[in-house]
Length: 74
Image 1 (cartoon, helix red, strand yellow):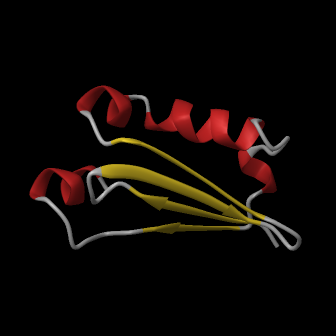
Image 2 (cartoon, one colour):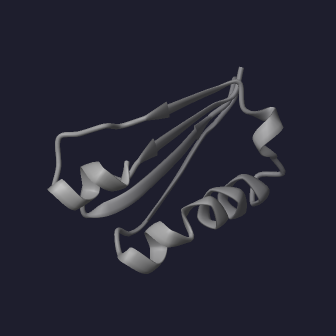
Image 3 (cartoon, helix red, strand yellow):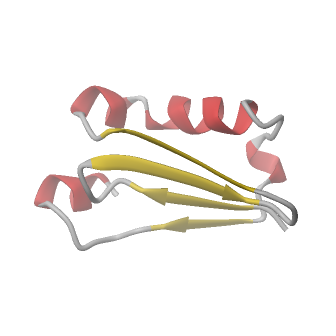
């Protein structure tokens, strides 16, 4: 089972993929530009490990606590 974790509620955009055999993660600065291209960042992250969104079984999104803008972005 492949899981994708997305956390944009803090100073960094945090993405993690958990597979049955490995764990991968990456961070990006949580800026307006990066947030606007969040789907591109996610797709690039998945592609770097030869995964597509259809390969993800569960998606977890952090809804807080964090800055107001970060929570709103989540």
